[in-house]
Length: 587
Image (cartoon, rainbow, N blue to C red; front, side, top):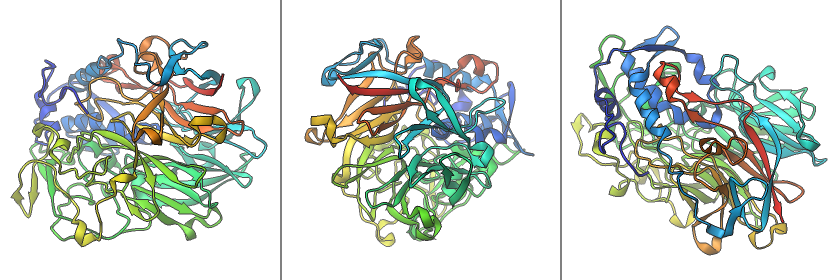
């Protein structure tokens, strides 16, 4: 990421707050007085799927300021810190100039706010949807769309499967919440007469998959217990591969291996939350010192936390963290008729893996969100990435970047003011990122950098992907990616300007370059341009239908609300019924 450090005063915003600075830097701070907002712990269950990890940084900061956790509640600080941060974020987008006309992009005839490849047209299929993620078609060619459920409202919208009728009419097939499916629902696939949905479990919020009958009458959970999904990154895409097996993408429990202040709301719900590796992993024993937000009466308390362990747990060099079958940062493969019995790891060591797809030759691809500059071990990554996925391969998280380079390279360092002090055996170490895994002792080799298929701007948030069919001519076989867009400064205080908010493609002949295919004329979401519903908002998924057309699930509006923050309310808005399905076809 690039730009100014909004929280630690590295570049002059004129709004630096001392308490905020000490929070970001991992140092103890005395809580300021100010308005306090009581937020139920149950709020976390209602955070829309794609946004959970984007929200933790300001939540954690506010929790630290209040220094109160317990009795089934979290006390959050009000406007003093969060208000200034989010106000900066709202004004940070560089949307004051036209996007470059890369790839012969021209304004759409129907929607002048949108630019599109000049060989194609875009139209609206349906609108008024809420938090839409995935789509699927049954064996009769009928289209269905998945609403994730959740949201910061008194009565959160339910997760649902809707059938999209001709003319954009929407028919509810099943209210998944009413059938025991916990928000947020993410992946949707139709296979052998039934739907399959990835989601969190209603029992313990672990990552799960359920089978849903075509009429929605029967919902059966076939896989559960992926505990990393209890934290910020949950289970994501769900697809059927060329081999007939089902593939599930599941993110890890942390940003970069260490549970820190950025996961304070999660720790309050589950003090034992941690990343679980897929194989026995030997640690280097690096421990990160931060304020201990669990202490109610002593704001000067600090604690040290190692990698792959719960908050407040120190580690030692050579310590082994046992690998588990239901780990995080992985692509699973399984037989849907015996999901629990056939579950296996297809690829591991992936950060927040969101989307997967295959080309006509059976080659698999995966879209991954890169690191954030947050938490106890911030990594100033330079890209998000799409990878070629090879079975049995470890992709390097949390010690290698999105480009599969060692994070120990100085270019990945965050400002020193954002780094927590690091100790090994109670000895203070120097600054800079170091490995948390002993790779040789763990039997892990540095990942092959040739597996990087495409590079996306950092924080663009590549999400669900698909591969163009033969009918798309010279674009056939190219990977198309929905880039959800950034939510700075929550993921980083360093970002300056918008990233993502478009659909891109990767042309292998052009190397790792990602090429805009559909985007707004001005960077950023349409709602930031007073063009709500007239342009691209936050594309979450792209799928090619049985008719050969491209369909885009546009999640809808997600924005920062500085006025709400100034009143001590939660500083985000997720307006329902702002989602759109777009259709792209050749002219």
